[in-house]
Image 1 (spheres, rainbow, N blue to C red):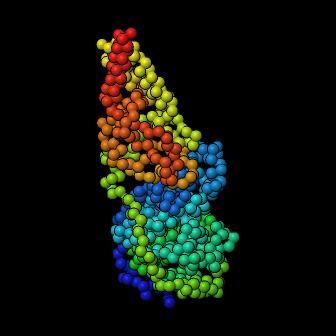
Image 2: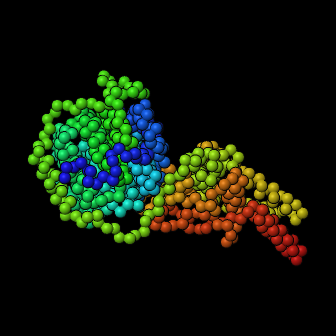
Length: 615
């Protein structure tokens, strides 16, 4: 084989592709900390170059929908995701030292402001790209903020917190029997390989520096296990590899992989730390040599997901990914850079391409030939295009349409109703500051203090009712109930006991907050916030919200046993870690409660009157 890829071409290389490009302008604002080599700002620099080259006019520009809690939990452990959601720079050194060590957060993977939002953003772009490919809306999807291949199932690693690549591959497997993952980052893609080490539906191929180098995995003899044996291919390389040597290994191996495995989709991780002159790298690839991998994979006419990854000399990262985006859309970009927002970063030459250095290439021809033969031999042991048994396909990931993003215009039905105290007049939610021993914040209406207070009110009303005259007891009881109702309402709205926050509309979430194992729930987790949004419980108007509050208040004014209109508290199950009260909370409308109260008072007064006359 000559490695040209022509044997599998479905059309000319210049064939126009439908490209979906995912970018969130906020991603450049996240900051790992002073001195840290990972800088999300490089994504913004890449985007600026693309805009000034005019590449954006040839592709579909999309803002990724942030990945939800349950989306991240398709691969990662619930307690790990919950920790990422709750940890902050202020709390990491006080209450969460053991968790930081357990989940491997520290110097390489620091806790910074907006960490969870950052994970949601880049993971959402990769999963969104997979969805685009699944439905045939795009031929190529790009998310340069993704490609964080070191993250494990329950720990962070190598600047990576959430493994968006694994999540994207899991999404692709819903429609494709086989998915190929290729990694050209200088570091071994250990997180992705580990995730699919025992399956024959995903083949992982990694070209990386091996030896005394992070993460220390990726030996050529690591081939997979069980059904996944020989479906993990590793090409260990030495310092200083250049374009020619790299392509002499990449093209023959990938050609054989495409011939034998016949994937339905390909994920290419384009880590730019394999470029010459990288701050942490030791390869000697040029931008064109790195991009030749993208050009070669594009020629196979298979759905292709392009992701970012490493890259720590950010001006070269922006150059590389901009050029590779141009290749994806079928445009050869001019070497002279257009003036852009970060023009000063690219001096003194102000060109798109940078010449490689004269460093020594320690990869001999014999070394490369041995690696090539070894991997091709392993591929020859595989059956061609392994079949997949019939099985139920997981449901599609829900990606809201563009018009659904304006949640404020959609009204309250897109606000996740948490049944906390709601002031329907000024649109503020009052969140209780009381918490149980497990750190779960309970709504005020479920707190023992308010229940005791409500029982006391009930007892006072019954006692006072027995001493009233028959003529005026109806008016007095009605006045007392109304006044007490107002007092409880004022106490609930007191700033000393609750904090008011403005209502923010958001995407509806079902079970994203519900714990599925025995891990501890987040400290700011509300018991009732975990309830699925059901049409029966999701209020759609201010009047409906008011009726909910009215019903809750009436329930605590008078505890009436009735089988009707049960309040939907969470039930104990294996899917939640939240404590549920053993008794059932019930309520009746206030008008019926008042009627029962007056009837009780009349009966007591009549009984006393008859007793006195009989005496």
